[in-house]
Length: 280
Ligand code: PAF
Image (tube, rainbow, N blue to C red; front, side, top):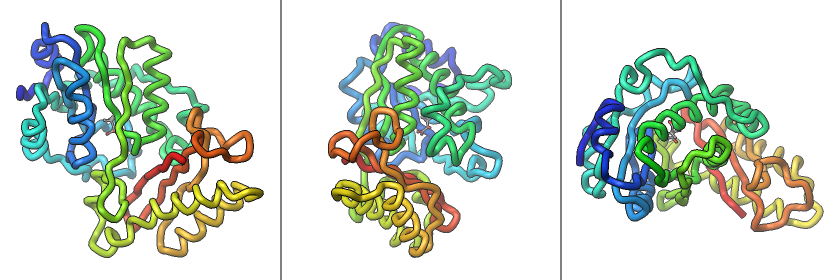
């Protein structure tokens, strides 16, 4: 596996190697990331992973400085998965000048849910993803794989790729879960033992809300408010627990029908903010 840090070295490493299969990450790789790499590998002729903790998608009070940076360990895991090229730019490599040109996503999709509680988050995500895609796919088309754990992110990126007519297939991977049902996330590492034991309550709350939403005659806003309150009583600080249409993340226009919906949640346990979702 080649490890490259600059955009020009990445382009040299990919020259003449055909269609990239690409998994962008912020590192501190867990089994969820590695499952995406395994899924992506057969979809291209050269497997590329990026590791870059993107300052642009963090608010000033968020965990940019403390976000775990474990490049050597990550490189070992990627080598074992048969990754061909690891792109691990420093900030000065990816943003040699201040990144004053940004990608502004559609506010109808990007200013709700995560974007409401983390203003500017999706501008930061779209800007770095657009730049990473420009670096990885400068030689021609290919495939990029994203995890559905970041459900809204996938939708925003899909729309961006469609609207800019980028020659890139966007493929999504399932959320990987620990044995108790907690969605794998690099931020799970912030949880202490007691919080870790409790953390599964988020996915349980989503499951319960999805089940309740399908009961005839139930008012969705009332059920969502109850779910938020129940989680709060368990010691969480929920941002939202909500049932949305998969296609556009708007509240369901009609009585909830299974197969078209997703329940999404974000909540803080102690100092750790976790997100999760379930399609139903
Ligand atoms: O999902 C992530 O890890 C990040 O948002 C991404 C897509 C790598 C952009 O920084």
